[in-house]
Image (tube, rainbow, N blue to C red):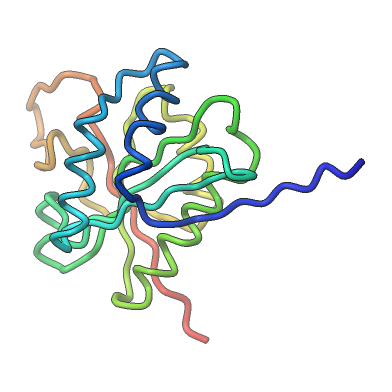
Amino acid sequence: MSDTRIINISKIIANDCYEISKSFEEQQWQKPIEQYIQYMDDQNNGLIDVLLAKDNNKFAGYCIIQWKSEYTFFYKNDIPEIKDLNVLKKYQRKGIATALMEEAERRIFYKSNLCGLQVGLTNDYGKAHQLYIKRGYVPDGNGLIYKNINVKYNERVVVDDDLTIALLKAKKEN
């Protein structure tokens, strides 16, 4: 018997919202259905693209392309941002995040020469750090960011999901 896996990437549609929320709830991650309904509205208004990964037709993860970043440096330089990369635990280390990143980068590089993202700094983000470095991302050179604003010298911030570093990847010339 073959262990063939088929990973499909598509944009979110209304029917996906419940399945996504329920899937995360089953692993004790709080991601209410309203969050995905809002994402769909934002996608319909051209603000974001929500990319879903399905492994053999079962929801496995998603990421967002935000075409106009809220992070000042990316916004001022018109750098689209990959955000909110989430893969269900049972699908981690199976190529889902890589497939989502490849599709997000493909879409971004069609419109831009640079792709950006922010990543948290706690050990919860260790797998993401490794993935982004392997994919060729480098720091944007602006240091720490808290809630999309650069942290100044001697400034105190809370270490939570909003404390990040921004990374960039340049489009490869063919």
